[in-house]
Length: 90
Image (cartoon, rainbow, N blue to C red; front, side):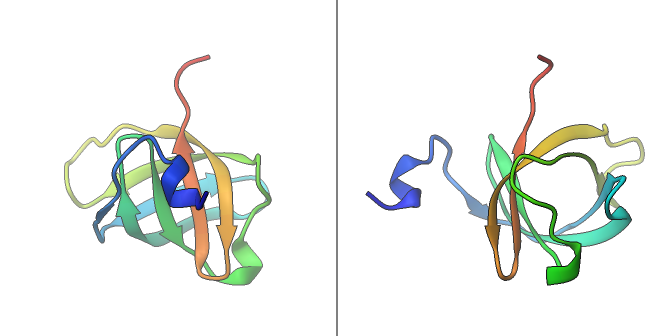
């Protein structure tokens, strides 16, 4: 079974800018590749890719004035970037 078969949410190609922040990488302004109700894939340079399981903050830039800051978890790493899952209040 491929990873696409395991997904609960349909992914939609969507390019926007998102600011991500974590102590290990600081604050970075990155581009998204796709998004779903459950998460987002962001394009990152290899030296900025945090390990799977890392929790970081993200905020969409330029679409609305006061976009919420969301907690996200790295769930997939690829050479082009990382798949982030939106973390619900736990």
